[in-house]
Length: 162
Image (cartoon, rainbow, N blue to C red; front, side, top):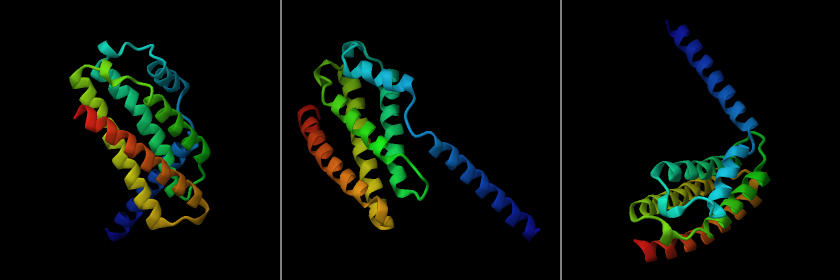
């Protein structure tokens, strides 16, 4: 009976590893999602009428990008330069969005997603500091700088709207 449990655990681990490797193989966000974010950033989506579902979809793109940045804490190969490029592009786009146009309830949801992103990045940094993967140290420094600047920017938004 004990051997059966060990075997089952071993096969579960293989499944997780296989799943992770498949996820790591997808290094960039899908074109459809890049286009959707671009529509937001270029003002092609009318912010005064934006829905909760549209905001959720928009921030799912940021979560996907953040997940790719988090691979800096993984021993698996990853395209970190591309992930950081996407992160910086997304933030540059966020800075262009006029939050005054968002309805109050949607604006609060929007800011909530930004706050969640800030905390997620802080967690990635904390984990990276624990792991200290030497060849990824430059990415850690880059993420710390990003987090510092993003947090200052978000703090201004929170003061204005909360």
